[in-house]
Every structure is written in C-alpha cells, then in structure tokens.
Image (tube, rainbow, N blue to C red):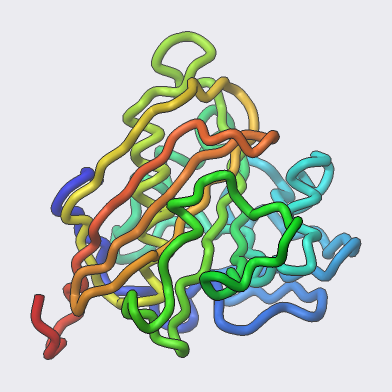
Length: 264
C-alpha cells in the first residue's frame, strides 16, 4: 500500500463485511460468517470469547484483551459506541489486503485489533461542558448537507484499538513513521468505505507531533469531513491513553466505483 494511487479494491460481499455501521448496538451477540467474526457489546457487559480461528489475530481474544485495559475498556463500554468488531485478519481468496492481513497481523506487529463506530452530534449541537470525543478539532468538524453528507450514509467516526508490537519500531521503542502512515491510511479508508465501494487514496498529508512509544496500545480515529462528488475528504489521528494527538493526517480519497455517473 502506498500513500498515493492506492487501490482499495471493491468492498467485500455482504458475507465478508466486517461491520454494519448504520445501526446502533443494543444487545450482546457473537456472529460468525465465513470471513467475519462480529462481537457487539452493551455497557458494562463482557461479550463471549471469540475463538482465535475465526479472526487470525495473534491475541486469542482481542475483545477481552482490550476490556482488561482500563482506558480502552472505557471506550468500548461507552454507550455511544456501536458496531464493535473483532477484525478478521484471515487471508482473502482475492489476495486483497495482504499486507494488513499478513505482515501487520503477528505477535510483534499488530497483536490485537478491535474497531467500533461513534456518531457525532451535528455541528453546533455540542452540549456545554461535555468533553469532546477527541482533542482534534479538525477531526470533529465538517458534516451536514453543506459538506455533502447524505443522512443515509452519515460521516461516522471510525475507531480502531490496536495493540502494537516492537517490530513496528524505527528507533528502539519508537514507532516508524511509515508504519504510522499505513495505519492512518487504512483507517481513513475504512471511514470512507461507508461512502463508496471502490476508492483510491489520491493525496495524503501526515504530521508527526509526538513519538508513539512501543510496545503498547493506541487508538486510531478517522472520519469523512466533506464530500464533493467523487472526492471524499478524510481526517485521522493516532491518540494515546490520555487522548494526546501523536500523529494526525488528512487525505483525499477518490470514489472509483465502476459505472458511477458522478463526475470529479
């Protein structure tokens, strides 16, 4: 995967999809399909263990792993969180996403991965005194009809909890900048997936604000902030347990869905 001209490939068929982000979760279930294991959790409820053979991650039960860490558990048990997914890292028959599902799925790279969504209130509807979801104002801005948001395809905040290993280091104990870019590219495109079936990352700009110390967990957040026909503008951050912004990025993703009539 590269930062530019990055083919995402067509979205998985319904039985391969990892999440259905448009409906909030209200129950605790574990569902396994040929290429997907999805676990949804309600507040203060520990979901059943997810068998390792169904997600191909180095950690046997990624959800229980993050629920055992206080700061990540708070995020997962937030009533606003929904669409919680233990990411399926098994290789696809098509060969797509091989780098993420193979190289970035080991006990020394990405040791555990769980994703979830959050809906944000409309611009200007934030309650006084309420702590924002992220310290990144750019990530939380945008949306609504003026920015091309379709109510049936809302600009959801996509969140990925990742436990990262030492093989992602550039210098000892510090994550490699290129690896940070890969994680942001993947999560920003995941946020864009709610807007399109097939897309390329056309441009991407990343700012490295603080070193990411390894090994350990981080949260990677991403969200579409504007859409102009085929052009989808996305922002992303990598944050630590205190909510500090370690790395931030913005990208323009081009919708390349076949037979789409919209023009650039």
